[in-house]
Image (cartoon, rainbow, N blue to C red; front, side):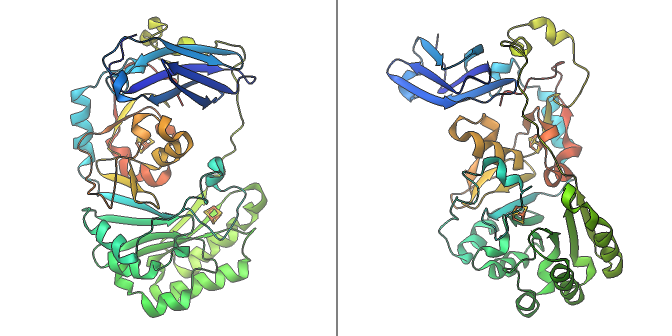
Length: 395
Ligand code: SF4
Ligand code: SF4
C-alpha cells in the first residue's frame, strides 16, 4: 500500500482469546496489547523514511482477530471515511464564543486516599505513579500566566499534596479566582488556608466526601470551618453515590442547606461491565469503508453521532507535567493508549514550551464520554457533522 503519512491506522475486532497484535512494515515491527469489546483502532506512528513509498503491511495476532481496514491516514478521521465540514466548523466556533475560556489543571495524579471507585483506577499502572513536573511554584504561575483564560480550575489526584500549592493558588488567583476540588484530607490544612490565602483569590473550593477514607465528623467540622472563614458562596460539597455510601446523601444535603454552600454535586456511580462481541467479525461491518449502505441508515441512538466540539479552542486540560489536552477524555484515552492514541487524544503542547489554544474545533464521536466539567463549558458548541452515521468506537 502507498504510505502517505507517518500515521498508520489499523481497525480490528478481537475475541477474548486474542491478546496481542504485531504490525510489521519491512524491518519495522511493533507489538500492541489488544482491546476487546467491539471495533478498535491502533493509531501507529511510522518512521519518516516510509512516507511516500509503496510497502507491504502485515498484521499477525495470537488469537481470533478480524481486520476492518488498514489505512495510511492523510486527514484526521481518514479511516472512518469522514471529511471536514467547513460550515459545521464555523457554526461550532460561533456557538462557542459566549463561553469563557477555561483551563482545568490536574495538578498531580498523586492522592493521599485510595477510594475503590476512583476513575484513575482505569489505568492504575500509570496514574499515581506518574511524577509531577520538576518545576517550582513560581514556574507554574509564570507558565499559566501566558495562557489567557477566564476560568481556572485545579483538581487531581489531590491537588493539595503538590508542594507549594498555596503559593500557586495565590499567584494565579490574583489574575483569575481559583476553582478547586479537594478531598479535604490531611494535606488540606484549613488553618493554613485561613492564614495564607486571600479570599479574593478564590472562586469556589468543592470538597468531596469519601466515607471509606474520612469520618463524617472530621469532614463536616473541616468544611464548616472553611465555610465560616471564606463564606458558603466560596464552598461546595460532593458525594459519589457508591452503593456503600448512599446513606450519606441526606447528611450532605442537610449540611449544604445549613452552611448555605454554593454547590452540591451528587455524582452518579458508574459500573462498567466488560463486553465482548458475540462472534468473530461482528462489528467490523460497521466500519463505513466495509459496508457503505450503513452510511445511509443512521442508527437509533445519537450518542456517537459525530459533532464538532470547541474543546481545545475554549477549553483545555493540563496534566501534572504541563502537557495540554483538548479535554479530560483526551487525557484519559491518551494515557491508556499512549503513542497509539487517536490524533485528537494526543497532547497538543506543553505549558512550559509556548503553548497556544487551537483555532479549529475537535471532531468528536464520543460526547457520551464527556466529563461533566468539560461538558459544562463545551456542550453549547456541539454542532452535528452531516455524516449520517453513528460511528463505531475505534478505541
Ligand atoms: S480522593 Fe479522589 S482522587 Fe483520591 S482516591 Fe478518592 S476519588 Fe481518587
Ligand atoms: S469528549 Fe467531550 S469535550 Fe472531549 S472532544 Fe468529545 S465532546 Fe468535546
